[in-house]
Length: 422
Image 1 (tube, rainbow, N blue to C red):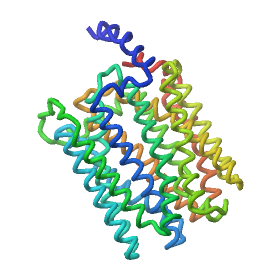
Image 2: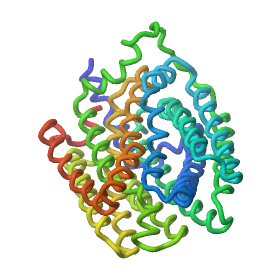
Image 3: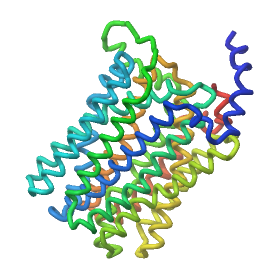
Image 4: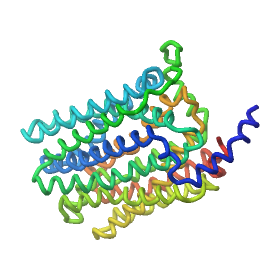
C-alpha cells in the first residue's frame, strides 16, 4: 500500500516543479502570502530602527545582541505550548491574535521612541514581540500547508522563502530611508504597526479551514511529539541542525550597525543597503530555484552551500570596502537560500498534518536560535574580542560545523532528489 501510494504521486509532483507559480493558483494561499509579505516588510523596517536607535543611545554591542536574546527566549520557552496550540486550536485565530499583539508592540515602541522612554521598556516590548512570534510561527506555517495540495508543497516552500527575502530586501531599505527622512525611528515603528494591521485584514479574509483537531489529552507526551518526530527523522534533524549552527556562528547581521558606522564609515541609508544585501542574494537564488528542475543531489548541495556561506562570512569580516562587503552579503544570502529551501521542503513533505504545528514550533526554535540567539552571540563576542574577530571566527566555525555534520549524519551526504523522500 505504501509503495503504491508513492508511485501514484510523481506525475503531479513533476508538473508542480515545472510550473513556477503552482502555489499561487490558490486564492487563500495568495492572501496568506501577501499578508505575510506585508508583515515581514514592517518587521524588517522595525529591526533596522531598533538597531539604529539602540546603538545611537547606548553605543553598545551588547545592547544590539540583547535585541535578539529578548525575542528568542520567549520563543524557546513557549515552543512546546505554541506547537500544541497550533495543532489543538484554530490556526487562523491563533495567527490573528499573534499579529494583533505584534501591532500593539510596534505602537508601544513608537511611543517609547518619541518620548525617549527607558531602555528596559524597549526590551519589554521585544519580549512581548517574541511571545507573539512564538505562537505566530507554528500556527501560520501549519495553516499555509492547509491552503494548497501536496503537489504544490515544494513550490510553496520556495515562494515562502522568496516572499520573506523580498520583504527583507524592501524592509531594511525602507527602514533606513525612513530614519534618514524623519530624523528618528519613531515613524518607522508606526509604519510597522500599520503593516501588521494590513496582515490582520488579509488573514481575516482567508476561508475557514476544515481540519480534524487532535483530541488526545494535554500531556508531556503530546507536547513533545514534534520533538520526538524530528529526533527520529535523522535527515530532518541533520538539515535543521546544520542550518542552525551555521547561521548561529556565521551570521553577522546583528553587527551591521557597528560595521556601517565604525568600520565602513557609512550612514543609515547605507546600513539599510547592507541589511538588504543578504536578502537580495537569497531572493535571487530562491526565484532561480523555483524555475529550475528539482535538485538531484540535495545533500551535497546543502553541505557545499553552507561551506560557501562560511567562506564569504570570513571575507566580509576582513573587508574594509563597502562594495566588497555588499557583495559578500549578497553571496551569503544566495548560499543560505539553498539551505532554507532544502530544509523547508524536506520537513513539510515528511511531516503528517496532525503534527505540523508541533514540528513547525520545533523548527522555529532552530530558526530563531540561528538568527536571534546568533545575534546575541555575535554581540557578546564582538564586545569581548571586537567585531572583526567575532565575524571571522564565526565563519571558520561554520565550516567546522559542516564537517562535523557530515561525519555525525553521513546520510546527509547521500541525500538525493527531495521528492524521492515523499
